[in-house]
Amino acid sequence: MGAGLDTKQKIIEVAESLFAEKGFKDTSLRAITSQANVNLASVNYHFGDKKTLIRAVLDRYLEEFMPLLDRELESLDLRSQVTMTDVFYALKSPLTNLDKEFNRGASRFLLLVGRGYSDVQGHLRWFITTRYGHVLDRFTQAVIQANPNLDKEKLFWRLHFTLGTCVFTMASSEALLDIANSEFEINTDVEAMFDQIVPFLAAGMCAD
Image (cartoon, rainbow, N blue to C red; front, side, top):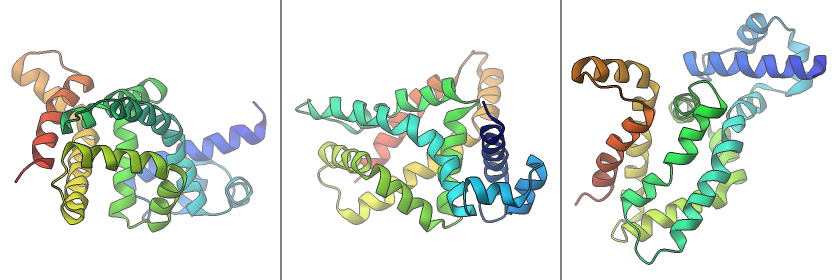
């Protein structure tokens, strides 16, 4: 790997860590360059600006997550009946795969997505919907197929409540797993936690 690629990777990794810890708004390029021990010219050369850097950080995860999710959702298209439980379980393999590709990948990915909403990063939502809109549309159609009585407003709110629940749970997954293992004297993991959250989310989406 050349020096240029080393520098680019270092910037992304430092930026990701700071974005996850402090958010996109409260992380300055100066803080990133200082911790990465590079100059601002290096950031400008590799990324151009902060918005492009933010997208590059998240796209590392999206490139792994979205194609797998698309395949899982494609398999749902073949079913005559689909439940909300089926739809949410389509997320399991793509999310758990992130843990294989990155350190605590699933929780870091969801935390960054949550930061995109809480920090009102409109450009990031535009980037995701532009680049991966076909996957998001397929997911939305699967939700509608599973719960055709949802109007657009309820669908909007419930999907965002779902995202909020997932972001909080996965962002604090390490602490939650420690508490669960201590409280119930069991050896649980992220996959088991996913199995706990799916029925809760499915019931919320289908509530009257």
